[in-house]
Amino acid sequence: MENVETPELTGLEWVADFAMSTVPPILMGIIFYIVMRAIFRADSTERKVYAEIEAEERAKRKKLPNA
View 1 (cartoon, helix red, strand yellow):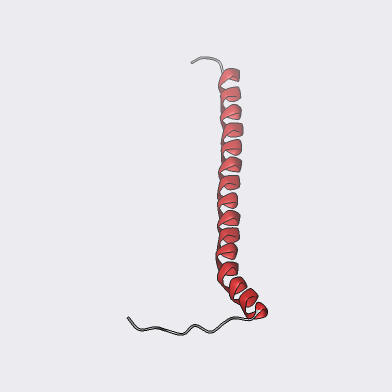
View 2 (cartoon, rainbow, N blue to C red):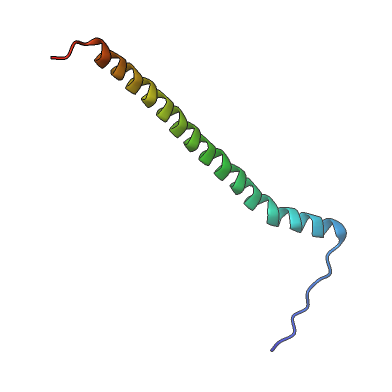
């Protein structure tokens, strides 16, 4: 095996390297959270509207005389 020299990093280089390594996954996590939250809220709203429509239809059926 060949010995490869690795340069020593200064404090600022280390911080910059750390930031460049962690910022993209954190941003992807935030985007994923926002998208999933939007999907779940849309589903919740859809269920609520569907329940209201169902309640209206049941109320209409109760008002109609049995044929």
